[in-house]
Image 1 (cartoon, rainbow, N blue to C red):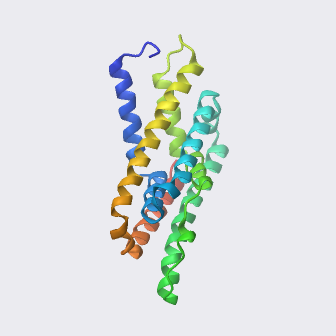
Image 2 (cartoon, rainbow, N blue to C red):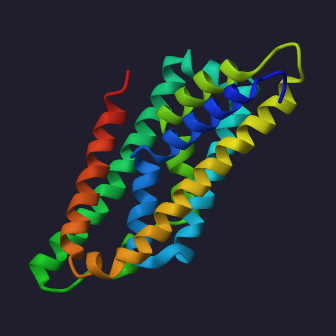
Image 3 (cartoon, rainbow, N blue to C red):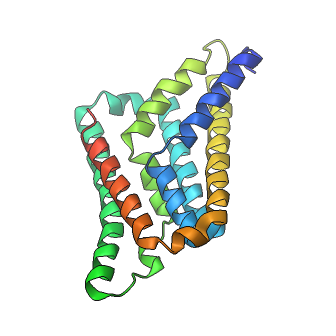
Length: 206
């Protein structure tokens, strides 16, 4: 593949799988959605994440990502918008707990449902995704071959690995969802708190 050895391809796939499986806002959104809504209703957020990653890939190959990373203003806009949105998701979940405790009324599931747009925003406006793509793709691209075809192939591999990992997580959550739903408050508390922590981490990213 593009003069890459089999070991290099396997190494690239391993990196993609580890990156997709590592806890982050996107993975957390998939886990939370799958626990409460099942795999089918989690597909929109999964596809949104994939679409957002594809957009970042295009930005990387066109040089837009490099420009953003070297522009303090552009990087700050992405960082603060993404960080605040992640924090908003966390506070929305924690607010549902507060309402249920104050009024004794369980929050509607729809208040916590993740959508396609959620996945897109979590991908595009997460500066760590931008940095990851900018650092990863060029390392596996050879200038003597077609840069576009290499980028497309490498991106498709990354997107496929991400989707398969998230789908696996979603299916596993389906098997244990009955237990976790009975402990919804604790699940919401942990999920909301983790979103807030991710938000702080993104906002503090230099």
